Amino acid sequence: MGRILKKKPDSQKTKLKSKQKNSSELDSTAAGSAGKVDVPKSEVIKRPASQARTNGPKKGNASQEPGFYEKSQIFLREVKAELKKVVWPSKNQTVASTVVVIVLVIIVSSFLGFFDLCLNGLIRMVLH
Figure 1 (spheres, rainbow, N blue to C red):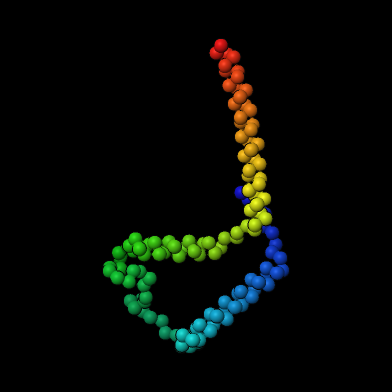
Figure 2: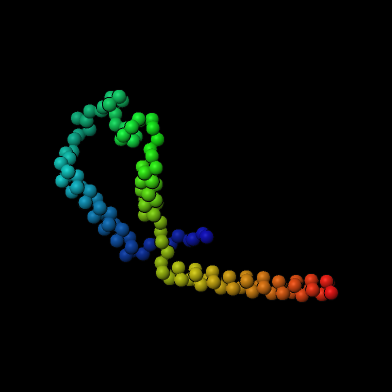
């Protein structure tokens, strides 16, 4: 079901900005507490390709596929990331949509019931 995107009220915008600001502050303090030092790009030394890190499984052969447990963890991480992107409807939108669905179900079922009775009566007349 398509939805028209609405502009967010100013109160939501300020909340989002404050959350982003807080998260960036937390990231910078976490980096400082971890003992990381900012190094200029000119001093960064790249590793040769043979020494580069791989993102493959930690145990076993590097060409081996991850097992069920690792695949499950990856899947659940991806699900969590996608659910963070979802824009959930408000309570009012949910109630309004539910009422619309219930009313439409009642209308369609009564329409089908009416035609079922009419056709049932017509078939009984033809057979007798």
